[in-house]
Length: 189
Image (cartoon, rainbow, N blue to C red; front, side):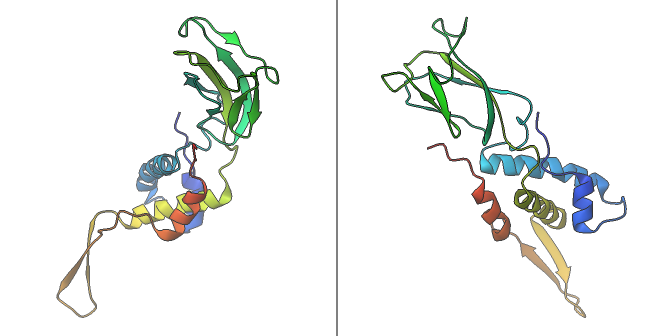
């Protein structure tokens, strides 16, 4: 699915770009930055807002932690006793309950028994619109990659015939961007 976390139009407004000269590079960078942010945060934010995501679990657990957050709606929780050949719906508030972004069993044993390909959860999650602070971080990352288009940059000092070469040696994201992204990292504990 891979929906982008911003648009060219929004980026151009943010960056104050009025011409179409950089449209190709912006269109090239936006999907890459969107994927980088999704990978860094371990979630997609907008991809499963209105399109259901299906996750499989094998059980032997006291809870199923869903990968996408925040959960909007759980369409179904199902169990298979024949390795995923046929499925039986588990009943909400009888067999399971949603606690935040976690499916918790209501079984007296307090866990989902182990079953190979035994459990399937179909749900929607994420945001209808990218949160404003996250979108600013994405826009700043687009600018970062637009301006830092390689690992080596050269520049001439005013009135000098010398060329200074700067090697970018850090693998960290800029601190102001990392601070925002760290707020959105999915925690599966």
